[in-house]
Length: 95
Image 1 (cartoon, rainbow, N blue to C red):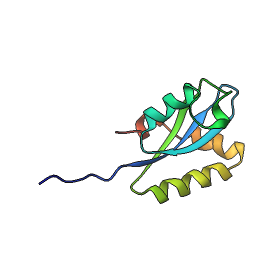
Image 2: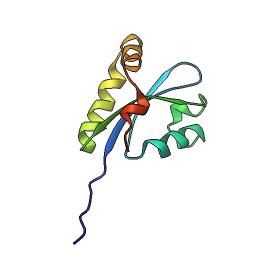
Image 3: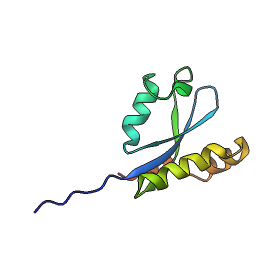
Image 4: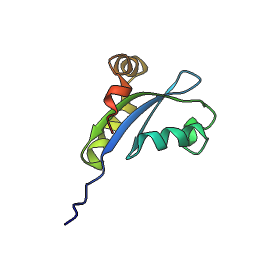
């Protein structure tokens, strides 16, 4: 019997080359960062490459991850900087 694992969902924050932040949602962080860097990601990041992954949060449901993405987008720049400073994106991103 095979069990189907439900995908893990992520809310993430990128630092763009102009110093701005971009928050997004995905089920595959590495692929999504590659897409952003290649200019195939969000319209916002297309002229702001290269991007750097600076924060990742893991969720069991798409709705929870997308809710968190929205919350992050509502933060002020100062609040986003604090979030990123308190984060270890590599440690948070355990595949």
